[in-house]
Image (cartoon, rainbow, N blue to C red; front, side, top):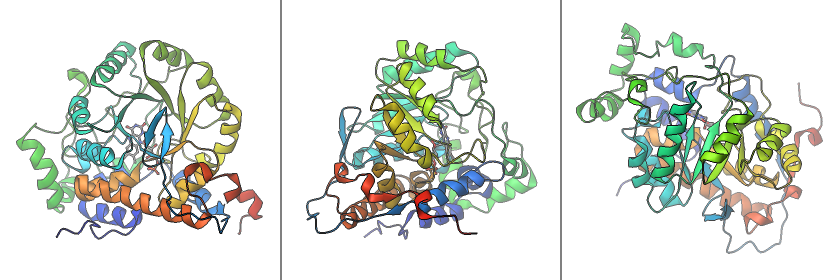
Length: 395
Ligand SMILES: Cc1cc2nc3c(=O)[nH]c(=O)nc-3n(C[C@H](O)[C@H](O)[C@H](O)COP(=O)(O)O)c2cc1C
């Protein structure tokens, strides 16, 4: 019988297995942050420093972790975050992760900068729900066409990411020779050759079927072939986006509209004023602007400021079920998971994504039992102590 654990007992194990399987250039692109990676570290430190305060003797038998998000019931309080490179981690990884999400009863957010066409992903997600994430290109009409395509393909929510108005500083990509168009250097060719499982299981498989991986959801003239390795630079940034773009999208998009990359309570209130249905508090997993506050620390003031006018989702750094429970206690409606499911997919495609989701499910369940919560509604502010209440940071 196949080992469903894949040898991974927690998300850190999946990360380590992904590191071994992928070429270094690709793994670093998928795992690391930007600049000095202070935000990556702080996202973890913030979550670690929030303490749980259990209640006992509450008969927690028959627990479940279902929630209703945007009026729809789902089996876990999480959403899979958009990660542009999942189709490079695994052959058509977007369909693998969409199937795993549908089986787990959680939404999958497909990134526009994916290697698999959204219509194919919609098929894979049948029976579940998928959301579509995009950045606004300088030529807005092209982005609006993409939004119309996602509407026709059945995306249940549109996620507009607003935190990346210029390309982030990621020096390791340059050092690794991770550029678009792909340049063959001795270093990156050796890197790929040393990872034959990825070379044959992903790259060669693309070359033999659909051709060199490229951005299948982009208009043809923007589909830049990805060669062996991506960098995200082919995604054209737009430093002119503003609140009128949200108002415009509100008119164009008939379903749920979510603004991703909010880090300030006033911006969340603005999003509500402009007609958004939800926000994702996010510092992009520490990958865009370094030295930002961990989104989990901004969560309480955002929840208070929006006063239930918006659905509030949070991400960045969630590696354990206890992290998810802490966010729910602080008022989040759900948590988005980026690297966790992404690394799972890199390790074993659909089975790997399932493994990642199972790990989170088991951990959330265990923590709920131990803090005295039978349902997500039972998880409240009384279950956590915020860091400032823990006293000064140890030197
Ligand atoms: C490899 C990678 C690619 C990503 N690509 C996108 C993207 O295309 N669009 C987007 O809005 N966010 C993207 N993100 C950010 C995630 O959606 C999410 O905000 C972040 O990963 C959450 O932090 P976590 O990885 O610590 O869970 C990406 C993240 C990673 C790790």
